Image 1: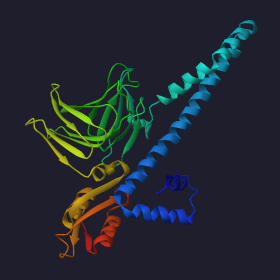
Image 2 (image 1 turned 90 degrees about the horizontal axis):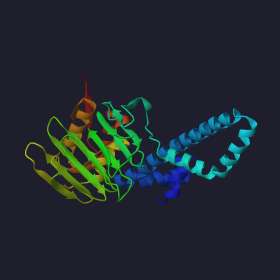
Image 3 (image 1 turned 180 degrees about the horizontal axis):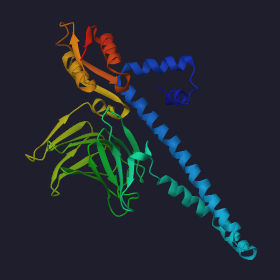
Image 4 (image 1 turned 90 degrees about the vertical axis):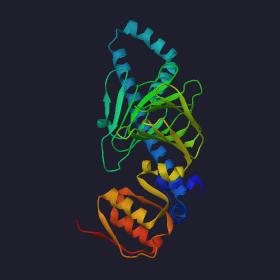
Length: 325
């Protein structure tokens, strides 16, 4: 698929032929859908960031002009000369400040503890996702019931954040400033990569899934536990100190950040159980001949249980119904 068709569609200018072509491509595989939503998320973030940058620059220029207007004429001329001389430097500074601006989809989920820390929260329990931008350009998707703490601007040798819950990171590459995610269970260090971390402090379990690049996992004492390569998942148990590494379907396991729930190589019963747990419902399967068949299945949470069951029917031909509570 040509990216230009995706961009045209997202800008609302696609023809009917391009829409049909895109729809066929999206239906071909879950990987195509993940790629599409990746581009959509990036473009949406850029639109909001650009709008914020423009407003900040215009506001700053207005305040500067107001200060100049309040100065006596003789002093004003000298100041204007200085302002013109360094106009390019001022503009560059505005751009740098704007690029370091932290964007989050909902400002009420951001708390400034002090000048040193900012707390980002996603307190929802309905699979809603919050996307934020850190000052270095790193993009983070916060899952439900997740808290991320980070400085407003990274300084020093390492870029350190603290995580409690589930988050997917797309870390801006910087070989001179490692990116470190600290949890109450262990620590993950990267240079520039994309990966997911999911901590369950109550169970003492932490899961790390690597999409691109490499990550180094350490325990709280700083001992190296493992180095992951793309396509691997590490499951760390604080109770035993053991870490299990296996190959997984990364796209399926990390598609939650786009509002998708994806299952790989699962039976119909496993799909139905997932739907029951997700929507807190009971489902009666009326077909038993497909119980041992395995499928890859993805559905969008916001569409609801009925839509997910209808989609499952189209894929498998099975019959099932939601039972009254």
